Image 1 (cartoon, one colour):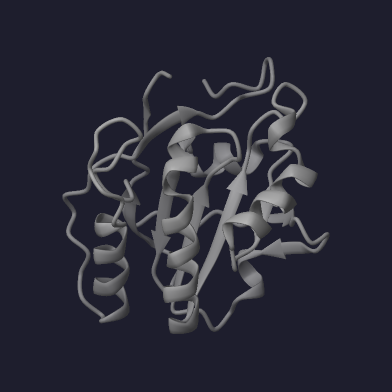
Image 2: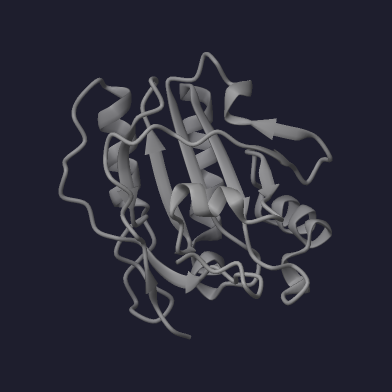
Length: 189
């Protein structure tokens, strides 16, 4: 499995808007959460070993931070024809098995991934209440083969700082994982 790093979208970037179908059949938009204090957008999928490695922590993030006013969204932008394990039906199964309490959305056109300059799964983007990017990068230092425990430390520190009204440090490590599986001819330039 080849490692692909995050593209590290510029801090301060305004969150690109989206309206995507969820595993429950509803259309979900970042605009559906006008009272959120923070917005966490996560690019994940079902089949990636890097996402499988952290799926319990993703569920814990939802349980820990949604009650604190953090709007969370998981987005799958993979080519589901080439990777049927990432279909919306399989996404619904995964959301239930993993215990995800946040919307799991399908970006079938891959336009949302392009708008966020997403490159890998997992890829994390944290926006403040003004929907300005304050963190992008890794969950923590754990990887499927490095024996470092999954703690969510980097992302949790950013969430905690932003919730406390403190600045999130600019020194941020890129996320690493599998590349987004682009549809033929749809790869970003």
